Image (cartoon, rainbow, N blue to C red; front, top):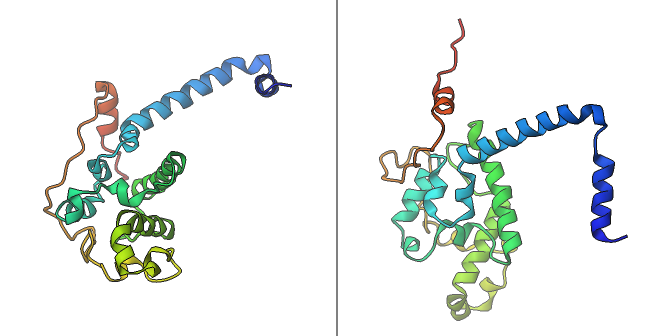
Length: 203
């Protein structure tokens, strides 16, 4: 059986009974509509690009953006250059999707800590990218740093602690920083009114 025939066989097996067709079509329509609104409101398409301003869509990244923008790295590297893998395209976007989903969940439910710290998987990626970009310098220092994966020895930022975000990364560390503001969403008037309507207060 060819691959196409297998796909059609699976689709036929998943097809609901005829009496359920209308309900399934309505449910899929509602799911598709909510997914489209969520994709638009969250500016999900912007995360496919390489613009550092995307990282302040959620506001809480303002200290990280402000400290990067005034660092030497701002002249040569974007957020993606340091914080996503560059082994291959699939790994890069899989990591962006995984990290972005976790960030969206944390920020939506206000679970982010006052001082945001990089998680283990992110630290490994940053260490790999430090070595990738500064390999020429590392070859002059010695092979021990270039060949040491994150967790198996000293990380680059054990010495270079202020590169590129400085020592203070509290959410309130740069309250007056001039960072890009998210552009207003182009939404239908009725939907904009619904989303901006204040929640009812408890008696």
